[in-house]
Image (tube, rainbow, N blue to C red; front, top):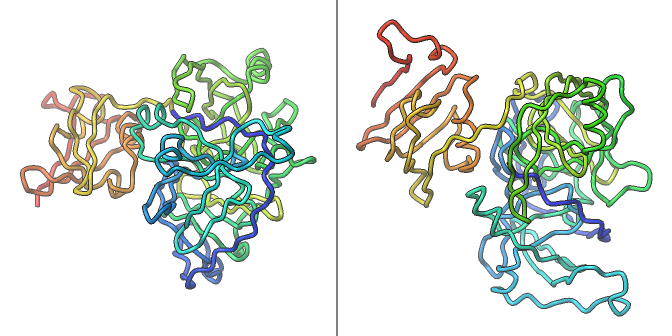
Length: 406
């Protein structure tokens, strides 16, 4: 899993820029009402659906680089190797550098057709470990210095991120995301475990994996009160490398009026709500007014399951997504995937839109039906499998898998 960048305490002044792109008609998300279509997006970007990593294309020196969208980060961070390659100039420290903890760099870039002038500078960080560990091609994280003045909608069902001029009607329940003092200038929500005091949780759109990070002290209280139970020990990937943590199942959590039972989280140094939780909703952030709107999405009632990445290797290029190795056992084998298959779609999603990490995550699950389309020996092959049904041997002694060829 990716635990996300630790939350920067550098408070970055608001950037005063507005996306001005030719009006685009909002795509209609499955759970959204007709009223949502009345608001035209200022800009919209295709992103990965279903709680996968959210990446936006930043153009620097006329070349495109993908950046993670991170609401838990006060200031944008660019990969240190890229900053060196681009020879980004360092900014002169203000007030002789007093109180400035990190070196800042000047960066000019574009998001779509809109210029971003990071007047207060960006930080540089080493993302090599994350790129390798996640098999994810990205070069930094866009923080709240870019998002703070914006209304941003993330449609996890359609896989679209929109910048909007106003909050659409019928966007769902409004939840306050800026607490007294506006800690760290990043969104924070009140999360309730029934019977316990409400806790502050950061909201991070760059944290994939299990639904929550839970502060070790709060987790100890939950365990003592039998509100959480440890499932196993796992490792995760961050900028600093890998770290170990406990995976736990929480009896129930509530944000606003929304309650979910059996949510899975990780032990950690702080509290954080990540993409697996957010992707249950159509999420609209009204950052200027300090609100987050949640509306039930297609995954609202989906059960949380332990993260289990399939042990397979995937090769990507402009031609497509090719499976280089497929484990002999597990959901991928039950589905009928073999090494050399060019993956066209997985569970109805185009493979090119899904990260390698998410492909391994989906094919590591054994609790949901699976469907894939692959090109094999020049033919399009459709595969379907229900791993749960396959647990009971079919009469012929083999798992039940449907296969058709065009």
